[in-house]
Image (cartoon, rainbow, N blue to C red; front, side, top):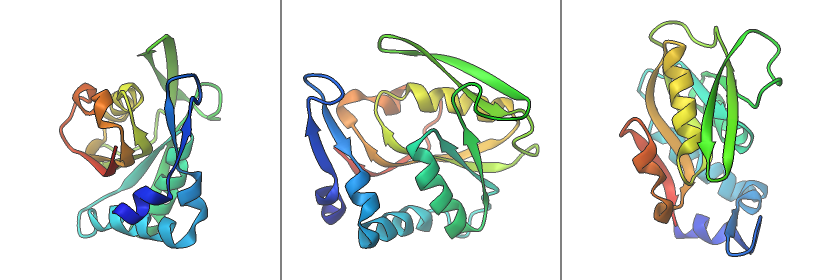
Length: 171
């Protein structure tokens, strides 16, 4: 995994002073690293009955679409308000400074669908906790939440309402 870690670029003081941003665009742009990342994460779910991948706006769409293709499933998108064209349900959640809202189509899943939630980074866990509530409200079962990377010092895993969390890389 060290080879994948080394492809991710650190951007100091972004988006604000004191934060070191993990820039995954360098990994996404490197074909060998991107393929390896997708293969390593997808391998966890081969042989399990996975009905859908849930991609979280916006970089989760990239990982989610690649996983869905690799696993032969569809992908369901969780988006910011006003971006989905059909009936939606919303979840507003707390950020460090303020709130944010996410939406999913109300008919995104069949009852009992087994899904993997995919996102690029697990930080504080607020976004994925909200996604988990939306998925459950739609009647699906979360098999696992899968991340390319996790910032362990932020303890986001502890905020999630489930214990099935996988991060390929930990910082």
